[in-house]
View 1 (cartoon, rainbow, N blue to C red):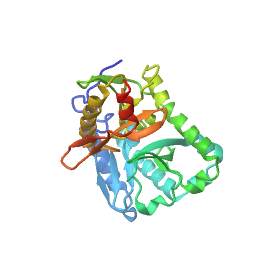
View 2 (cartoon, one colour):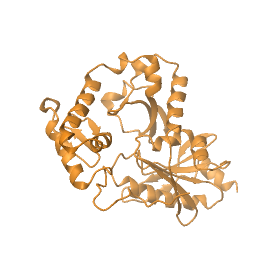
View 3 (tube, one colour):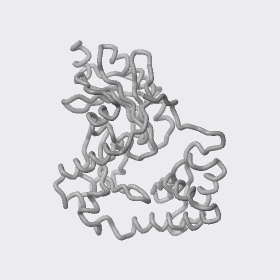
View 4 (cartoon, rainbow, N blue to C red):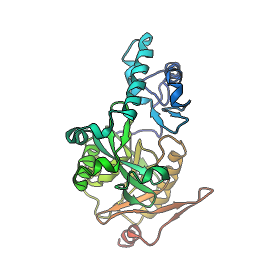
Length: 304
């Protein structure tokens, strides 16, 4: 197993969010995006790895940075123009409803999100969402070249829902996890995976497949995990009563990573066993953490 530091790898003058570019190149690309964004679509606020319009839309810049890096710098305005056109065409048409069933099945992926991810005004269009545990949900998305977009009920209704979910979760599990970090947090070992994919954290939707990817043969007592952002997850295979202490230590790591504010999902710790998922911790204002002493995780720890 490889060993990684928390945070993104930084090389000299590489931009910390758009790692294919230098700091200067990344700043230039962001400015181009903001300047070329149509005024009729609202004003743009730039963040490290995404741009946000005044209308509330968020547009990731990672794929754009990869496309720009492959072209001469003098051609970047054309690259940005094509990218923006793709974003707007996806939003205004042809709509996802115009895609064939086979196209939907080839693009669909399940994404883990915070329960607060969707505004109240949007939730009635995505009622098929699945609650994973308190504060965590899963939604179906189309993983398009320009951006990932959530699939509404109108499209999901064209399919057998369970079969569509299986296809979507299998697609996430098939995404490579190139390297795991093994961290000693004091009371046990935590495995960490971090990638640039929007679906990295979503690997916890199929824990057995995730464990197989990490080289873990079985977890008869379950697994603790944290998903502070969409780009990472942290897991601990429960093997002793020491897992109770690991839960607290994992919560500290999750809070630290969540505070980075990039694609955040949750600062809490969760538990998976063959019986399902549950939330283990509750973080209070000021950072104090309570560990639930009533659920399946506590029963597993007491069973040793």
